[in-house]
Structure formats: structure tokens, C-alpha cells
Image (tube, rainbow, N blue to C red; front, side, top):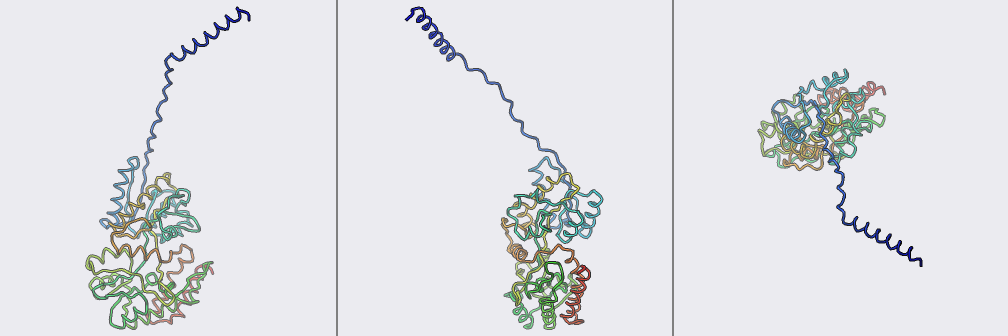
Length: 405
């Protein structure tokens, strides 16, 4: 081997080793600092809502409690609240929204939901509610759904049941046969002479169907006339049929009657004089099965003009969420459309069960034409002015004429 080349190779190898030793001993390079990601500051939002709760009533107390906690949890959201009288809230909402204004949201029963949807006066919420309705009952969701789209965050569910005085009737009637036997035996009951209060008898108890899939009235094909005839005969046997609801309520509170059909909105009023004597159960079942009263749903509806729809929906989900619903149920006595709320009052729980087993209030144009004709028919039958079958047939004809069928 060439000694010169060998010597050069040794030198190069030594230099490589030396470079490695120097690199190993050199201090580590200081990393370039990465600035921390700033925490996003929540956008300040103002949400305006309307409700129709009376000043000082328990539902107003409940919503104020919920909103107080919401404001503490969401300091970036300013919530403005306006109480509107119930007899004005639908007209006021519809007028202002149609003119391009109105609040971000309002809460009310679904009495006029179908018409508001057809008028473009409430916003569809399927996208904003996707994956967020866990815990709500099927009945509650159905109550704010029109033509397959959801138009509100559902909350309170309401249907009529049988209030009874435990000191006057040991066992409330579970069937219409038991009811008739008690009435004939001298036990007094007062029923309102309204189609709404007795709808569950017309349908579930006697198996009637109001409309077919096209919206055509078919109540004259069975069930409705039989139910009206039964109630007429029950009146002859001693049932008190009243058209003055205030008078009927007073009779029950004063112990003049053992029972009355009404809804959860009377729970607090009846509790005051009756206390532990107050009971609630389902309307008596009939020959065709359980009574199925109309179930209405109070929801939070969102203004299609709102620039804050997402914030409004999140507020509605908070109000009618698990904690908000618990406050409504246990402070206001409101039966809620959730399955994950622990109820402390068995009477409120009873109304939740009643509403969830009811008949979802239809939102069709045709159903809006039911009230007048069938209200008149029921009055004529109960007053002995018309035979049940003839009255129902005429009501169906009038309803179909108004609906264009």
C-alpha cells in the first residue's frame, strides 16, 4: 500500500471522529418559540325572546330561574325578555315577522303551528337540531314537526286527564262503564261541553277516525256519534255537562263534584284548596280502548328573519334541556317532553304519562276546520237538539266543504 495514501486516510478518519465529538459536545440549538394559540373570545350576541306567562305565575318564575343560570353560564349572550298576553302573542308574532321584524324566538303551544309554517313565519330547524334532540320524547318531537320538518325545540306537553277528589271517590273510574255506574250511584262529575275536552272519547275510547290520509272527514263512519250518544245518556243519568269552565272549576274546588276533565294548567289552582286530596288519572277507557286526548306541545319557535338563529336554538335547548326542564316540572308543575327528567310531583308525572299516550294535535289545514262544525254538533247532541248520527254527519259535511273535499 502507498504509505502516503494510508496516512491521508488516517487523517481523514480522525477529522471525521473529531467532528462527531465536537457535534456531540456542542449545546443543543434553542428551538424557535411557538406562540400559544389564543383562546377564542365568544362572540357577543343579543337574543330577544317572547313568552306569554302571566306576571308572578309559576311558569314565569321557572323561566326566570333558568335564564338567570343561563346568563351566568353564557356571559357573552344578552337575553332580552318580553311578556306578551296569551291572547295577543300569535297575532303579534305573525304580524311582526311578516313585516320582516319580530324577536329572535317565542314560546307558545303548537295551536297555530301549521298555519305559521305554511305562511313562512317560523324557521325550519332540522340542520340546527341535528343530533341534539336526545332525551326528547317522540310525542314532543312529533308535536313540532310539520310535513317531515322540525320547527321548534319542544318543551311542555299538555293533554287533558281526569282530576278527582280522593275524599269523594276512593277509586276513580278506569272505564266508561265504571264511570256510568258511579254516576248512576250518585257520584257527581262535571265535564266540559267542548269538543276539545272530549276528543279522547271520540277517537281512542270509541275508535273514531276524524280524517283519512287526504284530510277528508270520515268521522261519520263510526266512533264519534257513538261517543256523543254515550255522553248524552251519561248526562241524563246525572253527569253535569257545563259550558262555563270557571263555574265547573269552582264546583270541583268546592267539593260539589268528585271529578272533572281538564289539563295540567289547572294543577296549581286545584292544589290550593284540595291539597293531598287531589288525584290525577287517565280519562276512562271505552269499548274500543284507552281514550286518546289531543296532545299539544309548547315549543321555542325561531324567527326566519333572525340573524342569531344558532344562538336562539342553543338558548332554547338550554331552557328545555335536562336542568331547565327539571325546573319547569318541579317549580311550575309543567309536564315536560323529555324522558330524562326526574319529577318530584306524582301529579306532574301523571300528566306527562297522559300527554305521551295522547293523540298528536294535527297541523293540517283540514283540522283547523274541525273546531266549529264539531263544536256545534256536540252542543246540539248534549242539549237534545239533534240525534248524534245526524249531527256528526252534518259536521263532517261542513268540515269537508270548508276544506274543499
